[in-house]
Amino acid sequence: MERTMNEIQAERGERPTPAAMQPAPHLNVRTNPGLTFDDVLLVPRYSEIQSRGDVTTDTRLTRRIQLAIPIVSANMDTVTESEMAIAMARAGGIGVIHRFLTPGRQANEVRRVKRAEALVVRQPMTLPLSATVRLARELMGEEGVGGLIVIDDSERVVGIVSRRDIMFVDDDDRPVADVMTPRERLITAAPNTTIEQARSILDEHRIEKLPLVDEANLLVGLITAKDIEHRMNYPKATKDSHGHLRVAAAVGVREGYIERAEGLLAAGADALVIDIAHGDSVNAVEAARGLRTNLGDGWDMVIGNVATADGVKRLADAGADAVKVGIGPGSICITRIVTGFGVPQLSAVAECAAAAAAYDLPLIADGGIKNSGDIVKALAGGASSVMVGSLLAGTRESPGMVVVRGGRRFKVTRGMASLAATMSRRSVDAKDHDSNAALPKREYERVVPEGVEAKVPYRGPVDDLLHQLVGGLRSGLSYAGASSLSELPERAEFIRITAAGVRESGPHDVDL
Ligand code: XMP
Image 1 (tube, rainbow, N blue to C red):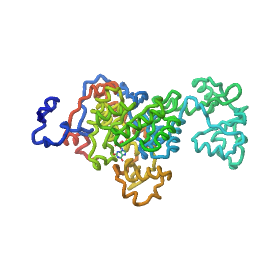
Image 2: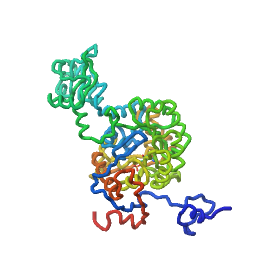
Image 3: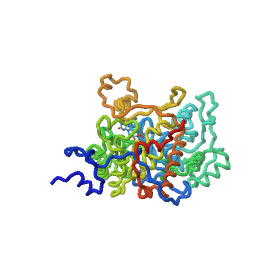
């Protein structure tokens, strides 16, 4: 016998829906309304936290990758390339390099992040003794390094040339041998020198680079003052066991994704994000299996996006080490309008979190984060971290230039399924190096975009924004009486608010 909706709700412990609001019986409609961040507030709890400094924001991105702050920069072409990924990792989060670049360029972005810091640089950049100042200048520019070790034909160290040495050299054809610091004046150390010992040698001789050489005078590593300084300035940085910043990178599910993934792992990517709009699909599952079969399992696999418990289970079974949640909540998304599909983000996170718990699988709440309060709500709903797009697109480290309109500064962001991004991707796929000029007009007309382009206010260095976001999160933990993110969901009680409550929650009745 068919049960009435009220009977079903009573069984589930839900409040009965008033008759007038009940859907027609032939529509399959979930009875609980989907909630998103602005629909709710968190109810304050008794707290023994005495200061915001008493809480920890440690979390995990994937089963194996730990983060000191639960913030991930989105794999969007207006958000994350190497500069953003470096800043995110230094702050204790992580960035996901977008995939709308040729495989070679994407791998290069990964390499730049991995090379930005190290305990000991194991393969320092070198120059042959016959090299010219021109070559030194070019290499320093391309590789972003301030010094190159000069070696002879038998690979023995014969000197070092620094940016300062070539700064005022007019004749670029001069051999570096003329301007370098030669071996007899070069300070070096033995291969087993500790960081502490290196620090005092650098300090004693007022130098910036300490090559490590073995008994045969062969180069085995390099310790730099900059790396030591970074370690002091960014004590919570997300790093691998060699002291390199961690970075993730996105791959798609279409032709060539395995070769792209291979290149990214070879460049040192710590995790790959299988990026597909509808993650609960055969394409995602097959891509996950394909990558595991071809590339083994010494790396972490994030898959997304999904918005249901079912989706989480399927991706967990396909081998995910973390799942990304969010269908349509993003600031630049129009998927819900174009397709009619989506789940309000907080409800999606909560449903997915219940399923993920059984697999001990971290969730990344992706999209719709407008402020630190939204981060607190997403984590209280069961996510382990949040992925942020447009909010970070306005910062100095995002790709793209600052534009000035009406005396105010902006940067541009765009959905990765927007018309412009889709066309740009097609031209990259066509090996057209990011230029879409050559594409025929008809192609534009046939795109069905699921994202928009927009401008966002320029926000300055990402570090300042992260400081505000993490400060808000710490404060949120203290309102919950939670000393860590893992305690937050169990202490979270949400309260639905009305339009009047939303209005009351922001500044009101004052002139700003
Ligand atoms: P926020 O709100 O942080 O969201 O800007 C970033 C997330 O939005 C997703 N994204 C898209 N979703 N069409 C969509 O439906 C798009 O064109 C699009 N581009 C990005 C993505 O999950 C991102 O992390």
